[in-house]
Amino acid sequence: MSVMIKALRTVGRYLVLMNRTFSRPERMRMFFKQFLKEIEQLGVNSIGIVLLISFFIGAVITIQIKLNVESPWMPRWTVGYVTREIMLLEFSSSIMCLILAGKVGSNIASELGTMRVTQQIDALEIMGINSASYLILPKIAALVIAIPVLVIFSIFAGLIGAFATCWFGGIMTAENLEYGLQ
Image 1 (cartoon, rainbow, N blue to C red):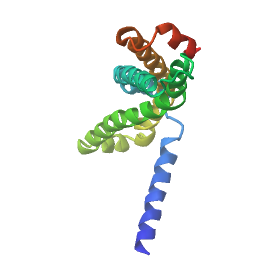
Image 2: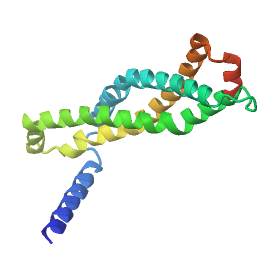
Image 3: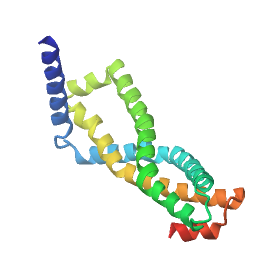
Image 4: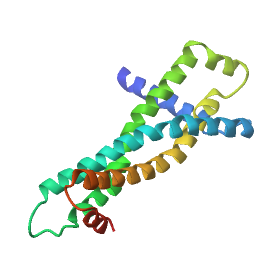
């Protein structure tokens, strides 16, 4: 029974935190300033890793599809079509969100952990500021805006990686890949 009570207490604390987080910000100018800072810190600073990983994912997908689907019965544009579908439907969204969860999650955890250890969160509470809304809500709002944009960048970087594989690797012509991408 004590395990059930602990679980219910944890869920209750989480719901109270979410209630405090999603309450209306006290100062909209300060919220907007924090929101822009978080977009830069969590979104813009993640563009490099998203582009790098997506480029290589697109290149590897193209190579693997070309090597595994070689058949005289298959049209030459099949590789481009399958690469497009895999990048659009699967890898750009799911793999990028997994990578961003690790990168952004560790950044947020280290920032909030440092603030807790140095008693900055306690200082915010003493000043009468809703620390959950002040610290967490701008991060959530920034990620809601930044992640779809990063996924779009990921799609384009993956397709550029596919073209680079065709041009530099010579596994197929770029025209066949482009025809399949359409």
